[in-house]
Image (tube, rainbow over all chains, first blue to last red; front, side, top):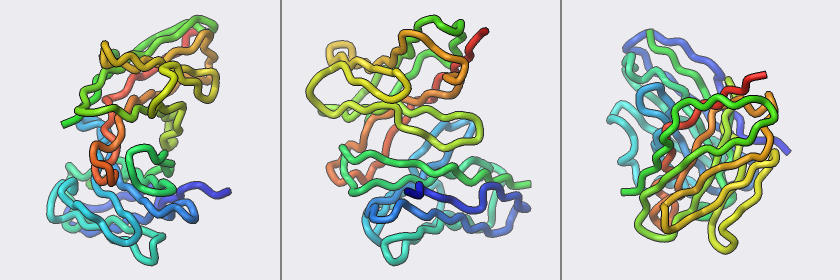
Length: 115
Length: 116
């Protein structure tokens, strides 16, 4: 079956512009995660959705970052007024259910470059 | 807070030789442990996981890992590496909260280079 898909695969944007990154989880997976992978910070957890709700948004790096999930499926991560330090690979993962023992399946990521 | 340490940033191994990648964790309860592999330009693929029970777990591609609570370690091993094993390997510990809201905590990764 289809895995987690993300679009675009690559995005180059100018500093100060807004960007939207999309994640399509595996069908039937109720939990969805966003991570950021950068050279300096490694892999960082950003936010988790169970269904359409995100219980804790404190992992988002700044108030320029927001995320939503509609219909319990597709999620978008929006970065407003992008800065060069936002350049990274943004990874999305989904799992059948949330919780400690639920295996997460990762998408290929969106490589964001802010010039 | 939980943390994961992968002490080796790079490891070079000859093809056909054995491999051990080290992982140490800090976690306030029984850990949920994972090893992921990332090939260039690819997402993360789960190699194996430990939740409970037998401390030696088998994964895909001939990998295994052993959980040692006394050493807070979860080292990844393979008896004989292939050139296709060249990749970045990440150890991770599972969400601390029961609801999973914390996500996974990853180590910095170990870059595996295979020499012919």
